[in-house]
Image (cartoon, rainbow, N blue to C red):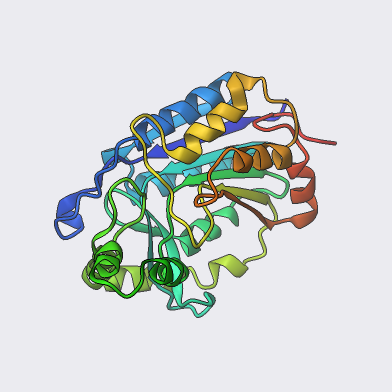
Length: 285
């Protein structure tokens, strides 16, 4: 039987002293991580839960790197993140909107180039499933929401100060954080050039909590995306493929927050991966 490792990350806040006084308080992200770990453990995965003050950039990248050394062809990594999504200016020139997406970890933002570069560490044929219950509020989001809200004081406040109950790092906090850590973020991108363009030999499937132009909702118990996923999963009673699983989740979510699914890495293996039963250690022949 193939081996499975599950890494489940959830942050209900960040270190305000490292984010210019912004704590990024959320309600349900730790609960999301625990719920995903419970699901994974029942499916036969070895689980590692990383919560709030333990969810530093060093701890998260070390956990992924350690998994890459333990997993081989046909094995599976299940990586989940619940927390704020953010952005930093793209210095590599591979992003159409000029911004790189991030996970807002306890000490700093983890840039998508870093994450993509880590997929390169995995053996060919290792399956990687990523669930991200977070927002990426960049230029696309800004334009779509700004058109809806109009050029008003309320709209400016929405983007600059954030909105309670959504998992998006406010734009003014993104700017302040980038200014404070500019040398660090620019160096990360310099040492991870064009991370998204690397020839990744493992199939990587991402299911995110919303589309690029939407926002992911927090909740009292779980985030909206995580809560809907758990409802569709129905304690393991769901029958079908990842493709059907994704569609059922989307069907049960409101139009203003629709999950996204896409593949990177080995596309041929990725198509087979999408046809497997969700969270199954067994590989589709």
